[in-house]
Image (cartoon, rainbow over all chains, first blue to last red; front, side, top):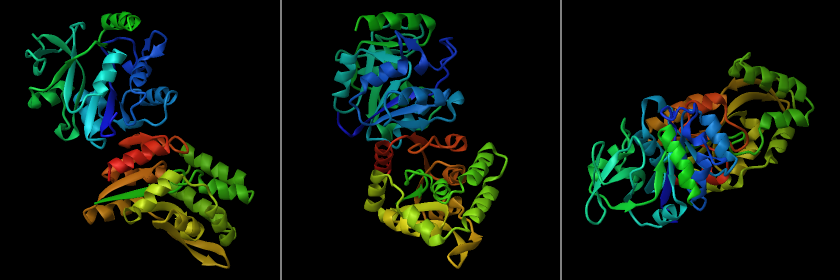
Length: 210
Length: 199
């Protein structure tokens, strides 16, 4: 992968909707923590930056059991901020192109590899699966036209990739960071977002099909 | 322009230097006790530092200086410093007379505490480096300041710096450092990657 890209995994949140009393990075998916499944996807990426907040010590220990060359980025204000802030914090001192990967996301390894090989900026989305989804409206060639809670063709799952100069500190979500730059190139992938316990059950099945 | 200020012990050197000195001269127990009480918070850092210097001040300066000259360094970090020596600084609470030769090996400007020397010993401390003053000075000159450190005596400087990097190269940074750091790294590759991205 080009050295002008950084991967930012946002793992600062509380994971409160999931109800498993721990940050999502540490939940067990078929015998392995979620963050380790994600790190497997990025084993050939040099600049992996993990944004930590809630249970930072535990997440750091878990990651270091796997690789030691990650740059940990603190989101000290994790309780009052969302993934949009973590994306900015993770990207601001990284490489020019910043790939954002939510800490609650699983992407099929073949699709993630394909995304890592893409040039320039893009937004990835998947078939609707989650209970509490943000949807994307696309045109005939798959470009992303808008995000919506009410209607759309696909589920916004991420990841996405934009130049870091487009990002600002914000109180919103990642898709709010992207909205001013739409339409953007869209890519459909196989992915699974884990927000609720039902999503978690679906993720277990999703991984079995890999 | 960007100035990179490095703590010395455990950030550029692979070992903490004060424990190394005390081990070499067989005064480990006395120093360890003081360090432990400081870590527990029973003795304030500055008081602990003054007491440690008083104990170590009785030792022959030339021998201490030679000992520290031989301490192992993080080579990639030193490479970064030597490639950007005009923009890199070392900030250490150690006395200049002890780290003089070590600092020359690193190859950039080094700011230290100072003492009054007599008969190859430290008679008394004359100044204690406040790392935050260095940060303030370079910021007032319009520089962006990046501070890399791991200890309680780095916290104020890191809080004021434009970018602060907790260094876990030798040991986990103090909790006070983790509570304010922008970044945390555990190996030289990660640290140097981040430093290069900040150039």
